[in-house]
Length: 221
Image 1 (cartoon, rainbow, N blue to C red):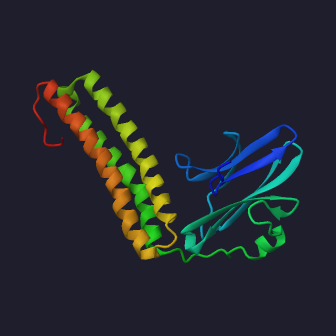
Image 2: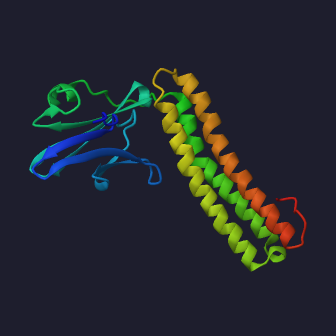
Image 3: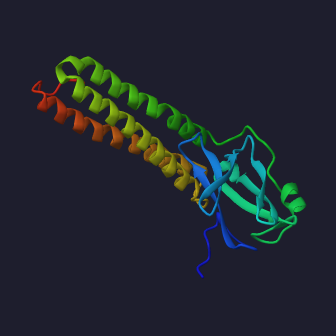
C-alpha cells in the first residue's frame, strides 16, 4: 500500500480502515477542514504566527482523537498531526511534549508574507471592480444579455482567481527550503500573475462580446 500524504492518516477501526485528511479550505477564509472518508467532520482556523496551534477533538468509531494544526518557521510551514491516547499517529511522540514544543504566538510575521496576504485580499476586489466598471460604462451598447453574461463571467473569473492564487501561495509556503525573501518574491509573482491571467481571459471575452454587439472595442476593454 502506498504511503499516504503527510496530511492524511489511515485509521483502523471496527468498521475497517478510515481515511482522515486535513484540507485547506481556500474559498472560506483559509479554514482547515478535517475530512473523514472525504466528508467534513470538523473545521479549524488556519494556523498563523499570531495563533500558531489549533486543536479539535474528534470521534472516529470507538476512537477519541485530537486533530492538531501548527504553524512553524514563521508561518512558512504547516504541521498536521492526529493524537490517539495522547500519542502522535505520525511519530509516536506524547501530546504533552507536542504542546510544550509548540511555537509561541508572535506578531513578527515576515513582511513578505504579510504583503502577499494583503495582495490576496485586495487583488480580487481590484479585478472585480474593474470588470464591473467596464460593463457598467458599456451596458447600454452591449445589451442586457451580453452584460449579464460578462458579469457572470467576471464573478467566475474572480472566484477562480481567488482559489488558484491561494493555492499558489500555499504551494510557495510548502517550499520550506526557500528563504522567506524568496518565498515572498515568488509568491507575489504567482499571486499577481494568477489574477492578471484571469482578468486577461475575461477581457478577451469582453472584447468578443463588444465586437459581436457591433460597438467595436471600447477603451475600457
